[in-house]
Image (cartoon, rainbow, N blue to C red; front, side, top):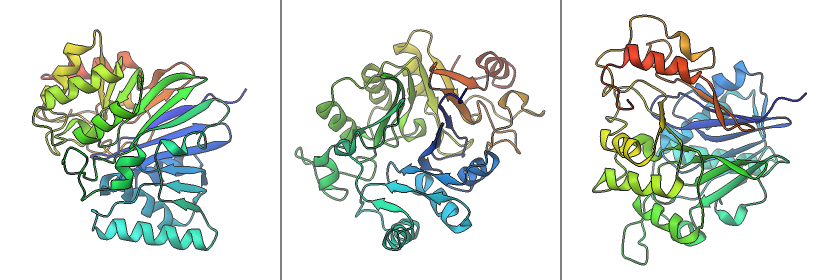
Length: 327
């Protein structure tokens, strides 16, 4: 019997990367800031990534693609992202230049377009991949411009929001780094965007909203998740912001909260012993014992977190996170 589709939200430190593995294909959502994606693919014996979807142009979401391309051992079938005139980084310029050259050489299929207009082209027999944001309007306007209310559109405003469903049932919502402008665009252009598992935007950090608690409450009310995941790096940018976690505990009964790494808010120091609850999957925080949940694998057929086991993760939190925000 073929293995059921599974999504692994990688612990890449401060950054975002998730990998969908299902019979016959591998899909990557964002690529993280360093070599974590490449290491994960190698340890799973994956030589071809059929599709890469990049939410937006920040380095902690794109640099891992350059690592794969430099290694020259893994083929990328197709890659989609949105254009971004605001990004002046060398990493962004290098990535787009290389992808264009590969497209011209017939080595990959590259298109700077990732909006709901592409829906229907990324699905398999069992897994539906929906692009819920940005709308064609917001992507078309692009960063460094203004929306119809005169608000500045940024890189984060056009961050792609992607939902994975299994046999018609929503499972996971990946929100990239969407900000208030992007969130309002998402609400305006979509109906239901619920999913039982939410990967919270901007790593639970400051998205630019004046009131992050209110911003979080709006997202929780819209998505109605049962589990919230924060992809964070220990000691970086104070993530997740306590008000964001508190809003989840207030808004969602029996909410399950998982951070890839152990926040400074939850423990002043990392544990002194090995973190046996996180399994053997690549995790950037493993060597320094910075993991909390580490890399999180979700079985899409059941919508449950397979690793780490929930009970073992909670035992770790009780022992090693004396000021845990999630408790």
